[in-house]
Length: 487
Image (cartoon, rainbow, N blue to C red):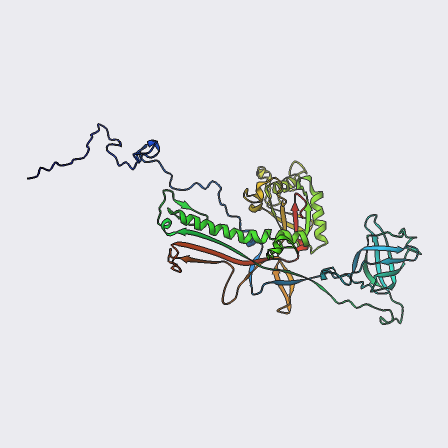
């Protein structure tokens, strides 16, 4: 009979209850150079905080457009709208041809490269005008005695002087402003014999084109089954111990931010630019639209006092005079506004602000203001996280954009498809949509993981897509606060 010797293994008793290499599972590599880094029982199990620390708080940046605008579908590659021009007749850049002969020259442009630059002389004989020199304040009122529609030449008869020269005007004086304030006709006159110019109202047309925004997250099949030690959580509520859940959720959050950032920062590709040559058309974003068609205030400092802020009000008076406006500011500009308003409250101006906006002596430590009224305008102030975040424009001292003033309410525009006037928010997003496909915010899964089973790819691909653009209507009512001169 064979003699079988039993193998009992290695049994090394210990006097204390502690994990040692001799009595504890050891997932180590016996050939490792440094066992301290591969010993499972290095110091028993580590103490692990399961939840991630949200050291940056809520990291999402979107929300601005949801506060001030709306979203509407569109079914074309371009959105076109028209805006009313001014009602009254006025010209700037008028030159004095001969002060002694009472002749002026309006800078007409009947064949412009850009249709928006079209300028025609529509002043008729016997209309009364005010002639002003903005540089000196010199002015005189006159009646038009001759008007050339083609050249823009005017002959006038001043009411209070024999000639323009006698009224203080000189030859070659330029950059004058004139506007029509009425007319004066003789008894028994007819408009036909006086060469009356009938004015047909015109509009200014604007357009924008949507861009396609895409993103994708990919995870292979093996990693979807890999559990982690740390419990993850994201701003949209995703949680669990699987890192791919966090990565997919953050990709979605990042894409949703891009939907807003793309139409805020967007630029149209200019002719022969590198983007244009690469067949990328771009889209006009908020900053670009205000810089082109709105009001830009460079190096504004609210802390300097009301004088500089009042210049904004005077400019708003010349535009649509929208009563309610919202201020979206970076931190420094917001504090400057607080300093400006605080200088008018108790201690600085005899308590003139007590009782307004629930401000009182008992609230002396509340140094922030969320709203105020100046002149006939109401302003509501809030911090814009996008301008403060270190990963975007908040990373540098002078980011170029300090804030934006957005008018509240709606604007009236003419819809050429409907053939009628419609009301739209001054700021709104248009996205591509039709019965077959809604491209506002598309998301779909491909691959063979996660229930997709669309291909033999051993991975899960989560795709995101949107096609949209921003319409900034009535941009002349917007104000862009900048720290540097924008291009």
